[in-house]
Image (tube, rainbow, N blue to C red; front, side):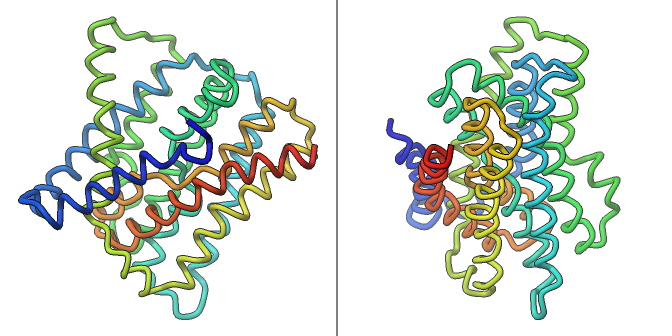
Length: 300
């Protein structure tokens, strides 16, 4: 599949969820249950298995890891700063801020294999393992603060963070799952992507973006313009090996995480606004990813 069409299956799943929710007996009441299943079980299991599967070497690849964390940190800082804009609704900002710095790890793993085979997959797995906890903490913070929840309690019971931390600890301790258990958990986690994307579509209300179009444009601009530019400048300045440069820039140009919608809904945020951001981000990413990689090739 061409890189241009790599994200097309994800977008089609979003469209399918929208159609099923509005034009079949699988209405909103069904998808409320699906969202809970994805958030509390499927996504955490998927994160745990994905992180555990790729051995990590503490102290190795520090420059690569630093580049990935820098890109994420820039996204977090800029998205938080948008909350200080005059007239920005706090609930809308708290819900949508995460879309500027979170990333679709499933697309990342699929893209990495096409870019550089097993080695690139290992590098992307390292970035996912390091950046997912940071992104989840940064996503929970504004939502918890806006809703008046205890931040530390929300972190401790957030299934995505629990799954990620458990995977990291098990990986660093060198634990490996028995074959039968690994297959079972892999199949459970494998259901997260299609159901999560269809849940996004079921909650889709593109009109919600009209409630704060300036904020939406700014968040998507950070995700699809600023972060890829930062990544290109960073890897060229530092002088990473070409293969690692490609991985970091692709990582920076990914569409936002589909689980952002589920997190927003479960924490009382503006779910339909986030669903619109995810859908637009997926469309932009279909063109933005190959454009970012082409820009990198032209500059090095």
